[in-house]
Each structure stands twice: as structure tokens, then as C-alpha cells.
Length: 172
Image 1 (tube, rainbow, N blue to C red):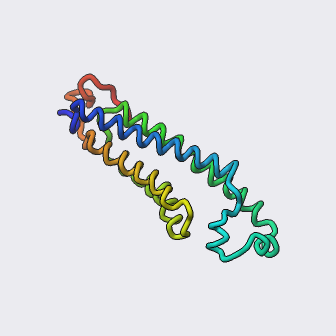
Image 2: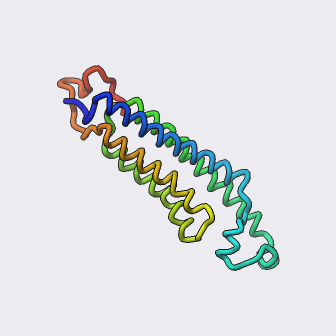
Image 3: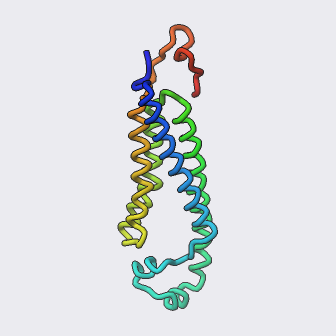
């Protein structure tokens, strides 16, 4: 038995899928580093949402900016960590001919929880960046769909004695 779509076209889909997921990983690392090092505690859109001014915030919560900066360092570290894991996943997608459904479910859940949540919350906030933040969410979804189209192993053993595919090492 072979994995679904093991044709050269499947390899092209797998390469594109791996590239999209890898780019999402680089995006996550870049945004994480931005949050850690460069993001101001309050953006103009934050003040609009809170219906507040910088002077009013400083008067009522003088340490808010310091606290938010520390929160964004932690948040940025988590975002960057997800990015590093995504880059690793993209390498696995590219090099392995068949993926298991559980890996795809987990990769999809990670996308919903990271870039999907970020995009959704930014729409709720009316963020100036809301339309831009849809791009990584769409790229993640497209990468996942292309991974599925390039072939997924149902998890059944495919070798007579070894449980391995012919000519392929087991990577689990």
C-alpha cells in the first residue's frame, strides 16, 4: 500500500504545505520577538478600545506600562516557542511522505489557538492590524489543507514484518 497521492504532484503539494507552515513558524518567531523587545505597552488602538488617554492611564495606573511590558515578554516568548515548533513541523511535513491524522489534528489545533485566536481577538478589538493578521491564519490553514491533500497515512501498518513502508524508515 502507498500513502495517498505519492505522485510528483503530491511532492509539490507537500513542499508548498511545508513552506507555508514554515513561514507561519517564522512569522510566530518574528512576532514573538517583536512583543518581547519592541511592542509598546499600549498602542493607540488599545487606548481607543479602553476609551482612555495615556495621561489618564498613567494617573490611575502608574505601573500599568511596566506590568504590560513584562506580560508581553512572557507572551512573546511563548509565541516564539510556537514558531520554533512550527518550523520543526514543517521540516517533518516536507521529509515524511505520510503523516498521521493525530499530527494533523494537533497542528490544526495549534493554528486555531495561536494565529486564529490572535486574528479573532484583533477583530473584536477593532485593531488597525486586523486584516493583516488574517494572512498568517489563512496561510496556516492552507498549509494544513495542502498537507492533507499531499497524502496522509491512516495509521495502519503497511509492511509485512517490520511495519515500515518499503524503502522508508519509520519516523515516530
